[in-house]
Image (cartoon, rainbow, N blue to C red):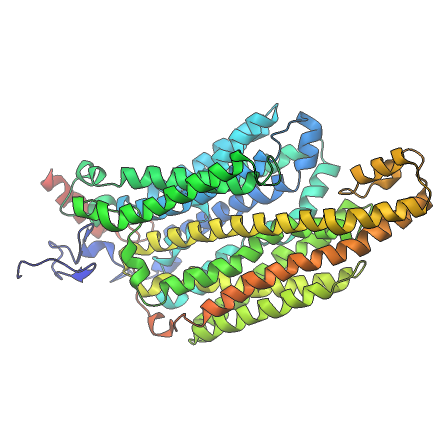
Length: 592
């Protein structure tokens, strides 16, 4: 073969003694590829056990985030009070956001098996620490561990995509997402039911995670045997490959993303937006992320290393557009998980927390329904560009319709929210299953990892923006309206002060001297004025959805990539690929 620089991906040889795919990072053996699968491979105990492991891992990830997030009030009452209570959910989000790209890229290079075993073990340890926590600070540490583990658990999209034919990627991803429907759809109600009907109350959120993560660890250990390091790198040892890793990029990325998301999460909650804590953290984090991209694009490749973020991905047709459109759509989902319960509390006050939980279930239920439909659409309707355009158009339309919701119109709110989240579910599935198809197979982890990190950062930005708008409009619209009504009812200055203090909860009856009739009138004014305040939130949602719609026109059709090709295959007796594994081990011994 002529001695020349190899392109990012090149088939070098069909001889099993030579790498079949080689570039500056990889030298992949033929045995790693999904060719020549044995009979009944997809019905083998190894493959079925691996799918079971992905399902348990996915359920664990949903439990780790959704259940504790809906129990924060009860957690604070039990082991608080603590000014750091909001850090319980924030710690999980930070671990999840940072881990996306790291897990995707590093598992591409070093193999995925021990990442998935280790990630679920981290979630298991986090569950044990959380279940035994005696204070909020210990619980924060537990959720940080579960967040880091969650970044591996949610990366099942990377692992399972390379094990099935390209044309079945959408339906397989959706099937695993569906395994967590009970938590994704009904998590808020389950949380409230657990707290009100069990003796261990909120600790059951962590007990359930221990069960699911534990089962995932066992199943991954016995059944999941993807290509090993020796199959991915014929020309380097583990130590040689380790020395090529992007340490500077790792520091810039993790530090920058942590600071950026922390700053956004602090703003308006722990510190004022104009405070030095918030501004400095956001600015320093953003600058670090910019330096990270520049370093990985222009510096690290020149010293013959493997960049954490392969920037050539963004030059491939359709990928950047899909990431950008997905970020715009997913920003709505992330922000509504935080803000929808607040809209329910303001517009549809109810003494029953279970009733409020059922209303909030529309967010997760709508999204999962959209994911299921998208799995079918993506697989059988090959005009994926028009699927993206149509779903983004739906999101804009139903976000606009949400501005018409008035106080007490809970049925209308549920219907519109389900449809808005339905469109988001379609965007989610299309981006996760289709975006990597036009890229080299060895970069699938980096591609989905970058997509996940960017989407997560976009979700943090949208949540911060929408929360700020809501807080400002509550102060400008709701508070004056309630105070004016209180003055009409001839309440004293002390009572008015107490009413303002209860504005967020709506528990006006708890103010001394306020009877049921007065509290009812104040609650009605609060709900009516809150509907006006929430219109501005949904105007901003329309802007995010509109951005996704504009970018969706620049995506491509992925139908041509939905082929029978299988990127990688597992090894071991449980899937009937023993001989390939044995030959690989023998060559590895000879090289030593």
